[in-house]
Length: 364
Image 1 (tube, rainbow, N blue to C red):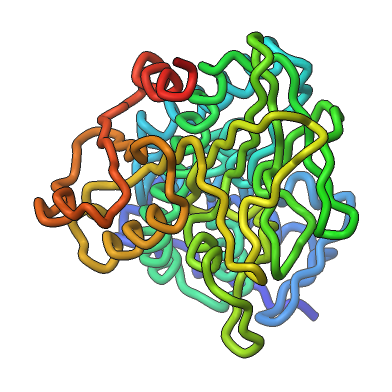
Image 2: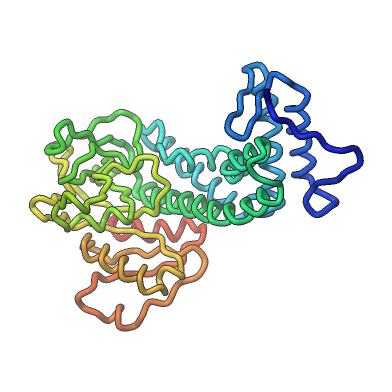
């Protein structure tokens, strides 16, 4: 038998006495459950007959969106704009080349498709916890207020990085794209499949390969790697069995802070390994781009990790540090350190022109 809440007539149990839109939506969801005995609800199980699921999850979605508005005010203007621009660069790359789709992490694709729904996505489990009486409404609101700001920041960062990095690729004028495959994680080949999946490669403890190669209108070839920043920590390290937590080059569908690495190559018949941990070799990139926040630039631990990354990659051109709205302040001693890879900091905002200026570094 299911355990269902029974409210006493005239008793208002809603948060804050007067309640709100999200609580009214939650009333409707709980009322739907009470009105359909076929739905089994206990603190440890939830069983919904197939014919009742569409309406149940529609009502749950209404609670999520209303709660998101209560807790965070809904998607910020910057988040919506980042999603729009991310969609735009994907469409333009497909329009100017043979690319059918540039596949981002599913959470970012969901954001591009519907920012409001993507922002509210983490709330479903919390709402169901209340329906199943595992949590109170007050706990639900508190958890939403605690969870959503960080979730929103991660979505924005990933969408912004995608727009910035592939806006640089767009500015180079790609006409053909090739996926990179490796059957044995030793040799790699380029295949014109029409698709590029960000973060993909055959998992290899030893070697790292580009995820794709593109050819420009001028006939130049560039290999690209959208690497999770933390993975670069392993590039110059020998493999150790006990303390090696590398993804092996395969970071598909990870919502992760990434860097863009570009390598000009001579031929599609010679796709290079960009790192070999057995041989302890790392191929210098022709260009490295990384989005950083002012807080990361000014926090010593984050800055130290960044310094290690850029010295590992050894970009042939100054590392491009992309900032959204304001620059962080690099320590003068770091900028003057001749042992450190040179860098240039750019406040890009949502400017396509700034991305073209970055692309010009390898185009000219």
